[in-house]
Image (tube, rainbow, N blue to C red; front, top):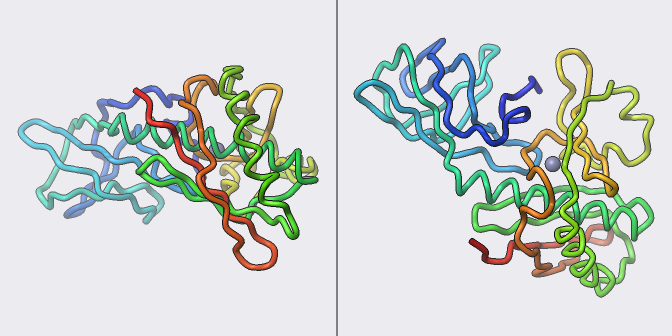
Length: 240
Ligand SMILES: [Zn+2]
């Protein structure tokens, strides 16, 4: 995964930039504020605006060595554009993504290093995480709701750093899931997201700057998926 602008600047949702390549319905930009999806986090939604026009961004595609913004307009677009991420959507993803890290950290600690087998966030403010938890007591999982919200109330800082892949692989627990961890950068490093004092894990998504920016989280449902897997569904409390 290349370095993404949104990793360094998660608060910058409107960016003036220029078109570097165009095909009907797809545009490559010099720089982009969009998160293109991956690791269980949905791709951002938003718009591109230019002199005399506007198009909705409907998806992303890595091809020909660059990131293409798929737009609902086949007109030729050149020159300067303003790329704008849908702020409510990004905020929901950042909250859910931070919430999944908190849940993941507490499951990892309470269930002897249990690993994630899958994760998916949804636009409706819910997310699911699958854990490799053979024989786990679902009541113990449900009981994690209170400690999750303790972490939210403690307003812990969320930081990121890069470590060499070999070092990340040596540290137990840093890479929780092959399906969720980001691919290394071109120079062989892995992005690590840290919730100060709680957890460090490889991740390429967008998160809150601190846990206190999240509304309360609820554990909505726990399902057994096969003999080994538990699927935990969480949701953000409705909050302004
Ligand atoms: Zn993450």
